[in-house]
Amino acid sequence: MESEPKDLIVLGAIKHGMKKFDKIQKMTQIKPEELNSILEQLEKRGLIQTQEKKGWFGLKIEITTTEKGSREVDERVHELQTKWNQMSLLYKSGDKEKLKDEMENNKSFIPTMMFFGIMDMMMFSMMFSMMGMAMSDYVPAENMPETGEGGMDDGGMDDGGFDFDIGF
Image 1 (cartoon, helix red, strand yellow):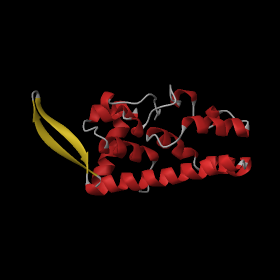
Image 2: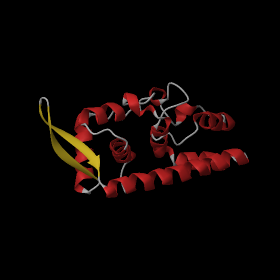
Image 3: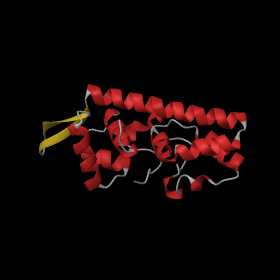
Image 4: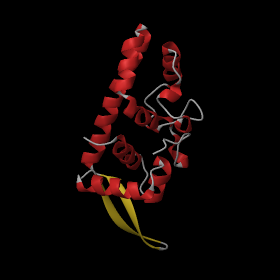
């Protein structure tokens, strides 16, 4: 998927049960106008579909991923996991320069990795300590997780949100 990480985050939120615009917007923290544009693009590309359903207060629109969209999320999350594994190996090897280069090359994916719960936040913070850098050099303070947890893999879908704001 040749897109911005925001597209993947929106698609991932839908795949993991967010079917309504307001819930997707709340989870992703993307402004409504931009979210609408992203949803239109995802629909044009055949990655999501919308359905009108009858509700108590009239028609409501539900958004779901298509099979193609679901595969796309899985493939992209696998790619992100591979990138994270590479950074982890570089950290464990102690090669500060290669780690710094790898983190710089993947800087735009870090919020997406956080969103999907791919990265180990403790190791992520230790990477910065090893390089003598602050995590805020890569992730603005307002986007930092409030705890060491969060993301798609923490089972936190019951409340419809995460412990952090990805800040788009």
